[in-house]
Length: 114
Ligand code: 5GP
Ligand code: ZN
Image (spheres, rainbow, N blue to C red):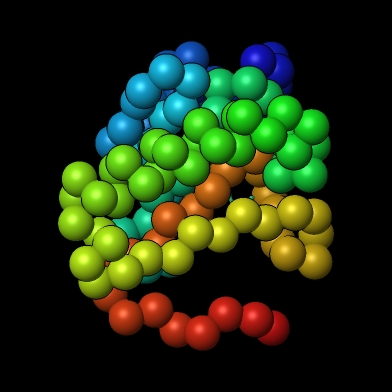
């Protein structure tokens, strides 16, 4: 946990969020500024600033992805389909430096890129 990290505060319940999933060290919650009909964020309780730092402990990536797989199957999001995105750094538009995976779904998504 990192004291001044927004998502660590959400994980600790110090900042409210609409939680949709929690199991072990993984939590999923609704993005406050949705970019699709369904826009969720999945995070691990161990604070890392981005996916490259997280890769030092690959098990944590696996745990987050197991949460995404479990949730999307349970909700049937895998039927229509969904996209998983993680941003690293300024060119990708990363704004919160606690590794998170966006899950976008619920409608036909536009293509990504510049
Ligand atoms: P990034 O731009 O770093 O890839 O993604 C950060 C995401 O966090 C953005 O999609 C933004 O809408 C979301 N976000 C920022 N502040 C909050 C907040 O306080 N609560 C929630 N639920 N989402 C947030
Ligand atoms: Zn954090």
